[in-house]
Amino acid sequence: MDDHKPHPQFVRGLQAGLRYWQVQTQDESDASIRRLDAERHNLYRLVQYGQAVPELWLDTAVLALNAFYLVERKGYWLEWIPILEQAVTQWAQDDWRLQV
View: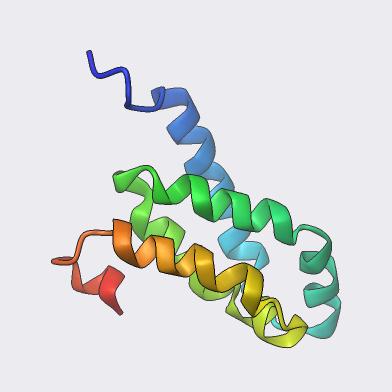
């Protein structure tokens, strides 16, 4: 057994969190951005954890893309760019969906 693989229950919890926040980040209204702003560190952490699990890369990429409006409106580029740089270097280069 590979000790470096996360427990399946942890992976399911991450996937549920990613999908929940994908829905929450679809609304680009000012009120939604204010709510998301209070949770931004949790969003960042979820994206970072999702980067570590290959089967969650696509869900993680969707959340990262959806969170763009929060980052853009609030000017959180210094926090967000290192997270995206890490994702780009980790994700499979042959998957065109992740490259986009």
